[in-house]
Image 1 (tube, one colour):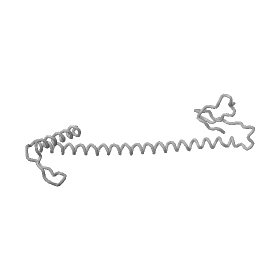
Image 2 (tube, helix red, strand yellow):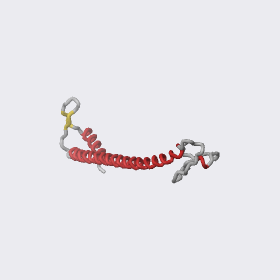
Image 3 (cartoon, one colour):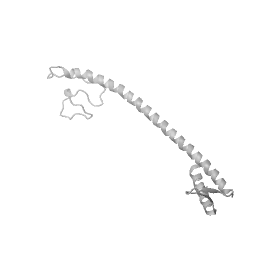
Length: 139
């Protein structure tokens, strides 16, 4: 027996074809040359394997739906986490900008651990950075 997803060539007689692609039922096979009758016994086995594969297909579809739902939940959770981080960054940038615009003396700790007072150029650079964060995260 040969199983294929393509139609047999025109040279194959109709009596030798068990099932045509897309056919709903199995056609009975009359094999006079088959003394054991295995060709006839194979028909019910093929029908039962089709029924088993339909059950397996349902199981696979259920598993796929479940996996898709889990993936969607993960994506939604990740999106919520990103939105929360952006909201926090926005709030911090607005507070920083308000402090920088207040005109008070501000200081920061440099890489050596020393305290340094922000001059006008450093204050302008920090204002520009804070505004960039506000523009990107506060929408």
